[in-house]
Length: 288
Image (cartoon, rainbow, N blue to C red):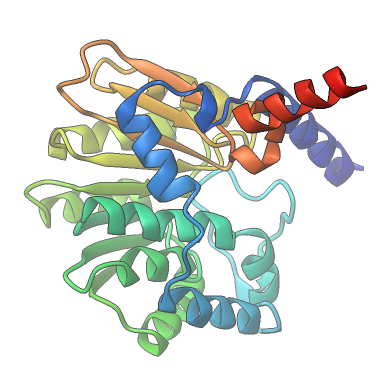
């Protein structure tokens, strides 16, 4: 019953998101339009996608059972201290769509100094590190047994320079931040609690520069995460925020005088927002 309630609430949050979301045909900001065109709407396939997807499919068949040490809010969909690698791969790892978005973001903006909070099985780490051979990535995972599986995966498909830290974000974040003079990209995918999420983002802000990008996963995962996202996107340093439902993206562009907040969806999911589609429909009505 608890699982059913979780999915019902999640579905309702998606409906609210879908209702207010816009497409690239509604966006007038050149920067956001470029981001949509080259990252969100881009359908090009890269060599890394197939090998990471193949690994992810293998993990979905992996029946090894792990003792989970969770420092955050835990899983609402699959609670419990013992979980199979298969279950984690299906319900906790990033989806291929999110993974490709991470890859394209790194590739588009040539982001090399990357901090990831929440390695899980290493799938998102692979997408982030595969986009640029000069990547310097530090990733933190709180669960030792999950981190061990991630190490196997990172060795199987090596890309860039990846430093893995094991422990809670609170304990290991200072060490990770000390590794960088500045951060090009932060990917936060863990510890889905209101205060924790806000604190982690604020702790990383002093390492940003105008071209930095922060990506937060699961911003609609719970009411608490929605509140956290709303607080974070309104921070005075944030100039542009984009709600993509699965993820929220923050930009710190100093040339952006007034903050702008967008809720966006791929245009194929709202085809009637397309100008040509509307024109064709009007033409059909006139003929009828």
